[in-house]
Length: 313
Image 1 (tube, rainbow, N blue to C red):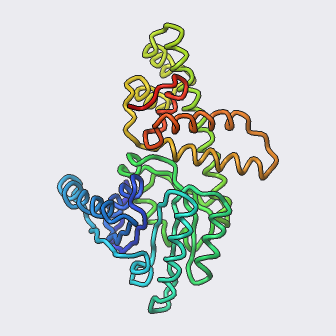
Image 2: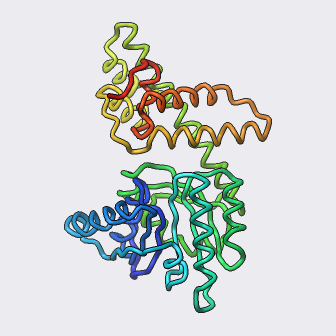
Image 3: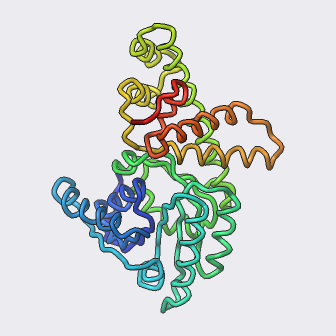
């Protein structure tokens, strides 16, 4: 993990599973984080985790405080703000609140707003328009789960303003292992991130199918998973998710409903471009089925349940 050499103030909007880990990583890395979440209980939980866990074990160099509103952060002395929201509707709603607050900010320094949510290109373009010319905007969806965020190993896929990319670079280095500016529009970032989500969703969907068929065929599914891990097809991802499928331990790192949302966005893009995506369409249906079986908020390895029709207890 790279750390900043000086303490800087940074805003963070959205403290779900991912946002919680990212905001705490920034505070551990030397930033004074001013954080907000729509539900106050999640905000308090994030602050308490930083104060009770991170300070004791990570020798945190920064701090964390909570804001009462998005507007408070936007209108204050925080120049760079990150957002991590669940879907396009939430992303645009928070951007509107930020734009309102930024319009009331004193001084002449330009604000920087970085949205790390996984949304479609249309949402990113709409967010840029909402923020207007007085806010420098970067769409920077991330690849990786909350454990990667906690370790500072996320991948940032940037699209938009070079000015915003440079202004937020030190913060992204605290939270991430690698970053790219893939184009000068939010659409570039959104589409690039969806390509990764197609691969991840399909690979784990196929793993769930293989795991279920192994059991139906009377094979030792754990042995099959071990063989896979040593084969050319094995990877850290398939090994980790295979273990979750075998143990049926689906405590969330990245949830089923989020993976399905990303596949839906990818299919929308394919439709827009008149591009057939039959594998992704079939896999998406299995994530939808897993949601219907009660696994919406479980780790996306729970797609395996869609192949066995096993409802969540």
